[in-house]
Image 1 (tube, rainbow, N blue to C red):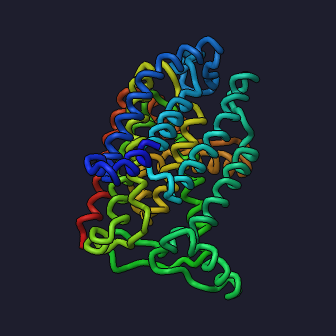
Image 2: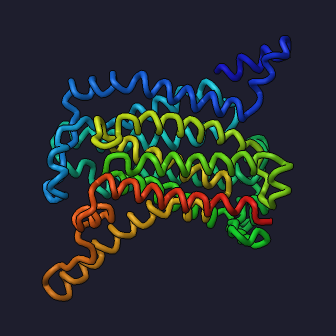
Length: 389
């Protein structure tokens, strides 16, 4: 909104043309989201407390976590509000990718809100059933995946429908332009054409997978939000590069018209995330809840697809990936051994992985900070692919 206003004023007063620079708008989006979060945070926490929207801690979790029972949850609403307002103020609202990311983020946030609401109202720590949650995640993910399959391939929406018709007339065999190929990091001359079905499938996996991975990681104070901010900042840099003809050409990345606007959303995510961390750091005054975790994971996954950095995103999200794998392996091995030996056995002391280390003797703050350090190193590895030419 403000961007549109200043853009109109720049035609008359050249001084306002500075607001057309995406780097300035990104900083303003970050500052706006940070300010909104810090100002609204105490009020949101008080309101959640008054409504008795408290976290129901699972009885089979670490015993130390029982003290957190009743801590206000659904604090992710604060993050989403901060991101939405700052994006609407400083992003180019005519950009098609801006609306895709916002709709995916708010769509997954709505799913998380229903899940959290059921936990709070019905006092059921499990919330929405896994099957129901997965269905709605899949629905949002598939819609976004199909749209992005064609949107990433063309420079503007005006060319999207003709491309879609050509694909239908080809009997679903027409390949997509090279900018939609899967990029292999560290080997920039290596990429793999995916086709529409391959692109859509990969996109669905990235978006839904990232959403659930962040949600599984969000189990300790500050554990999920800081890696989310760091990965989002890195994706913002990639967005700036692939959205410019000169930088993308020099660094051998595909040029994606309009992708640079994702830098504003990533900056808004950074500001909102840091504001939330102010209240979520140990001992947490508020928890993110599924409304925040599912939404932020979906947001990161969508931006990773738009910037064509799925594999780099996988590397930078190593903590999220390992946390998810720890749950999958634990559940699979328990079911297998129960069927085979009549008694379920565990690989880890407790899953997800952060609980394994807690039960093993690490303090909560030690687990959180060490996972942050690992994420910093993984993000730096991901960013190093920008310099390899």
